[in-house]
Length: 255
Image (cartoon, rainbow, N blue to C red):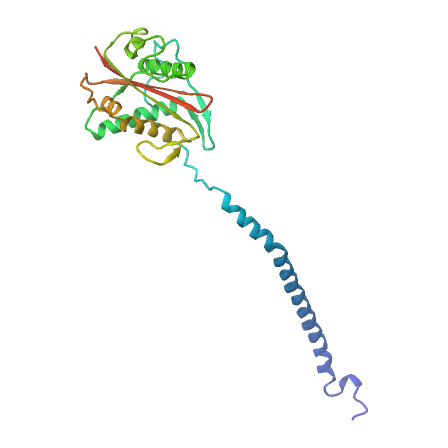
């Protein structure tokens, strides 16, 4: 019986043949694992100084949260009246990192914001007057062009003079003006901090805040000035190339 058994059939021989490939595979896997671990260690040692150096550099980087772009402004009213001020420059615009800011959008937001403040004091909304806005816009442009900031221009004309030169239907007339900057740090109205206007909506709110934090301007908006009550008004904004923002808000009591 023993002589008929082939060498491969000897007890234990077939089992040995099965274990050898398994052992080799285990050794190969162990070698691959060791190589991977070694590569990771080398990579960590190599990259760590770069990562740490980058983190250190972040200490000098100022992270600024950008505001959301403006919503669509509520349309104030007529933009193309039959009569306009010949010096009206039309729409002006400037680009910020957030959005293109246009003067007509700022005017719409200012008009809405002023009426909101009036509503808070149980006052009726002012009607938008396209001609009054045109005269206001011409004055804002004139202040930027001739580099002054005042109700009376270098020719000695006051707000009512400027309006009467174009038309004559307001028996009472008033004016608020403001000057600020777009896309540059400015003092926050009524506070000790600074702010940067980068949207039409934020700029409009800042302009109205300036007026509401000034006694005479606030009195004009809320009809506490001792004069006639307003029934209409117009906002004129000019955005200068240097980032300057000139705003004029004129009030009118129609005959």
